[in-house]
Image 1 (cartoon, helix red, strand yellow):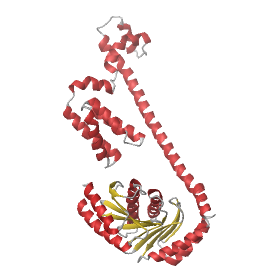
Image 2 (cartoon, one colour):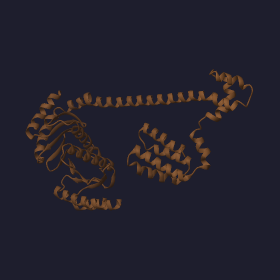
Image 3 (tube, one colour):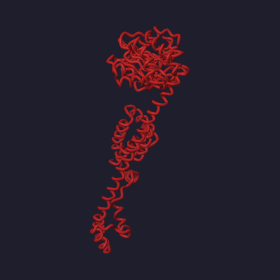
Image 4 (spheres, chains in turn yellow, green):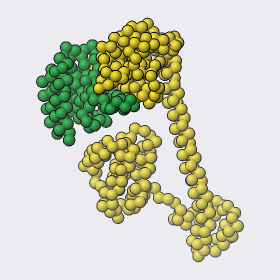
Length: 305
Length: 119
């Protein structure tokens, strides 16, 4: 089957009823169309409307949709279903005439019925693969973005560790100056920018640990647990709510409220329980990247407390 | 409040001879519903809000104002979706032998009442 054949089939109703737009859709994707003025947005919205309307057969048992109709003062829209997957869509500008549109759609449907298998095959061969390709491209982009992010994080860590190494001599110089006389040779080595030996590192370890090891979030939480200010936690919960709504959308407000009420019924409001609350909220975010971003951003609020 | 909406839907079904009705928020979530067991509330709600919104986008692309109502005819009946200002959508399920004139008039009345309630 060629698209030209379908376009020829559209000629008759196009000349008879002079619609603004007429198209043949398979699973909500446009296979062929004719229009007075091309508008990609219009075709996109209309094809999505056709696609969504096909769901009626799943929403109501044994419904067997025949057509959808809508009219305004000087326009009318008809979607005529040939099967549960194939439909004809017509947009007509001018005084609405339901009967005229229905008869034209019925005639075209009769013709198209002969091409039912071909239309589905065309969808499988030309339209479905495009969908999958878009999905795989999205996936590749996502992976590329992940790699970029990972690269940034790693390079950040490397820079950090280089910085740390550069800091080691200064820290060590200050902390070990009065500690032992044997460190003199070490100091000289460090000043000469020679990488320290394993022994030297081990001997410095205790001093370095004190100054350069970043505590984990749990350690921070545990160490500050007794000092925490509950009024600040309220502010942080507000910040978490804002961040959640930013990611989930306006409905996030209700999810947040519901989750908060449920969660803090069982738990006391502490930094640690807020951290657990963040993770429980994150489960409401379906996209993994956004979920991670939410956890990362909100954890920072806790660290600033 | 949902109880009041349910009461209005029940009243509408009683007066119009409809089989069921659902009140849907613009984001596609059911606010209240009285539906037969053959209808999946969530799907009907989401689909109704989506196609009405997409239909509005179509008419807006054509500079033809808003799309207030659309109906789908099936072999077993009708589903009529009507916009309630910009805040909600009323979906009505009617049998195939329903008196469409009466049904549309009752939908109009119920929409007016719901508009007041949703203010």
